[in-house]
Amino acid sequence: MSRMRDSLACAHSPSLYSSTVMTTPNPCPKKVLVLDDDAAMAQTAVLILNRLGYEAQSETNPATSIRRILDEEFELLLTDYRMPGLNGFQVAHLLRTMGSLITIILHTGEEGAFDSDDLRLVGILGVIKKPLSMDEFNLAFTRILHLHHN
Image: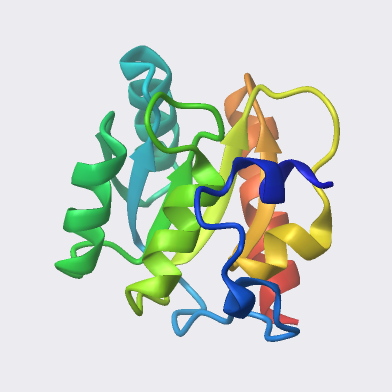
């Protein structure tokens, strides 16, 4: 069984495994929320994104980040995978279940690959491995957003 299906609390939900691929409405997101339980890592990503021209803020609590996103404060979520409480897949799944179409990118230090079908099912566009330099981060971030638009 895949990592995503193992990690989702509501993995028995039939709608999760339908063939529907999630899409996002905003091709050029500007306002980014960085979700990471490691405050220093979140701040580093925020600094990089702000230097790249995005308006980024950080959040360390998954539940709070979901509330902020549902209030439509942000156009893109850059989320860590492994966090206490909810992991990145669970956050993405909850957002989709609640009707959010926010663009989501996974930012993780996890070893190994994530299944692209699992990522698509919950609307995650891609994965950026951490830690990265600003140039590497910019290249990966831009590549994921560019691939999504083509």
